[in-house]
Length: 366
Image (cartoon, rainbow, N blue to C red):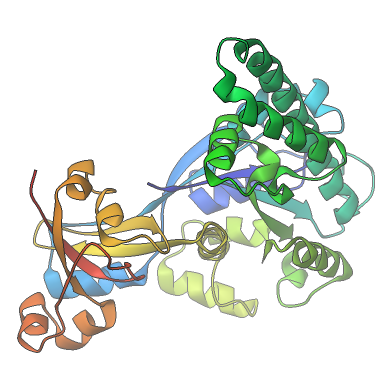
């Protein structure tokens, strides 16, 4: 499994510039006019994780394999997008396929960069986008209810699903996002939400895009976005797309010096991925051997058999036990054999909850 993040926002807020910088692909045309992005740009990006390099120094593998994040840069949405305004809702389907949304909000003044509404107002901009996502979700839910009502005549077991879909529709019609809809029955909730893939049900990271001066100081625009995110219980990130673009192509040491000159310790990619992992409750464990040192992405709280399934489904089906070394123990003792000799290698069974940074080896039988 991997992390998939859709980048959304009004036209001309710096989404494509940010996408270029984060992915280092430079394949999303960035210009000073709305609707510059007319097809969704996609890129698979390695997750920066210094622990992989440290393990590789000890194991000396043939290759290092990072976990990955899929970034999808979606055309700027405008008021009425859910009804076909601007470039219309053809791009909304791209958002549905992502696990999280990075909502980029312009938080700086610049007379040379046009704003689609003529002024800078981050909360207004956020509400425009979220209204369009909600309206599109309402339409999706209405269509699904109509289909279910036809099917229920031959299958009465669908009635609970229809009843809850109607409650969800009423909830959204009152201006509430799907994420705040309470449904105690986990089976019905999963069935309903997995099928509809509603955009307003996704985790959102509110991302304040600032100029260079805003990186080490919080202007009023940034404060408003941060307060908005806090009220929603959502994650927040602050980046400068312009600065991130200047980092592209720099060596690691130069890159860090450049960031430090702005009073920043880590780049936007690291910050956004870290925030995305936190929003979705994701962690990484490692496998280490002569062929490769590799990071695997799982949900926090997964037990060993389920965690093994991301390598191969047979690992979960035939799970016997796992050999586990914590990352810190591996680094301290220097090798798997040394960890085994001092008792730092543990044998864990089916109930073991995998921890971030565990170095694991699975034994299975099918």
